[in-house]
Length: 366
Image 1 (cartoon, helix red, strand yellow):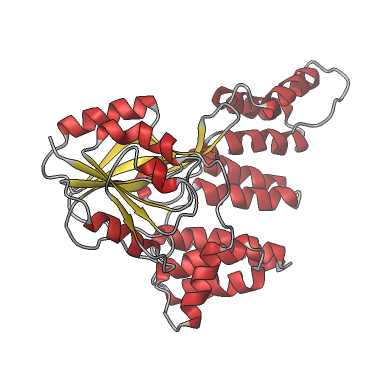
Image 2 (tube, rainbow, N blue to C red):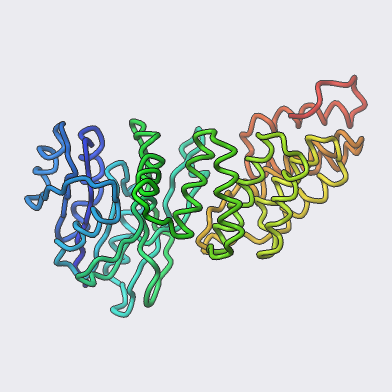
């Protein structure tokens, strides 16, 4: 059975660190904690679980800090977590089984990362991350922001999930500040960093600058296809916010040149036409979204609702406005099979019951 080193970088995590470490301490052989400047009880809490606590001066470089943690590890594999991550009980059991059965030729284990949840605590947004990595005893992380371990060797995908549950917000300006400092120092951004820089600008509502960054990223043609498609979606939202009407749809359609349409893009296009009361076109794109296969292992950000619930509930709206109430009701029922507790589905169900029963017209569907 391979040995595993848990490697973490932490700073002022006194409210979540014990929760994280308790969920994983009995699953690993050693715990490496690299502290980048805590001023709270983080180190005191960490000391209950490990004596391998190292100081590392923060230098606006997440990859540098993670590499320092990995370089202290002695295990066959390195597992990384953030302090506000944890393994739920089912995933703890699955991880234990994985460890007992892991083939010696596996270099990287991909695990799900659950980062957003509905009111019932069910994941609504998750993606795969490289989570268990063969210890190469050398730096493997790249990227000052949104750091990553480039894929190598034999990669194993599993359904084991790490759950990300924040208790307090992180510094919302940190990533943008790091990118701008890099640019001020004349440090060029590689294509991946360009994409994330544009995204940070978008999140900060700096739409004109974000659009320029995404345009340059796309024009240079060096980005990974999943980032390219996502950049088209962000660029469309930038154009919409800037009032650049024709370019709004153009950016979404441009994504089709790079690969078969993702359901996320189809839903964006459907929304564009729905907002403009072009219902036949909206129906085409939402129905196309329903037909698209979902590939969680593409490496891109997959929005599960775009493959079933969202296009179905939107088609209920579209066909209602087109006067085809039976088809609208059928799509609403399809949405309900995915999310039977959805308030929109339940509201629409009552509305269509009245419509199809020839009752007096009620409020249109949600």
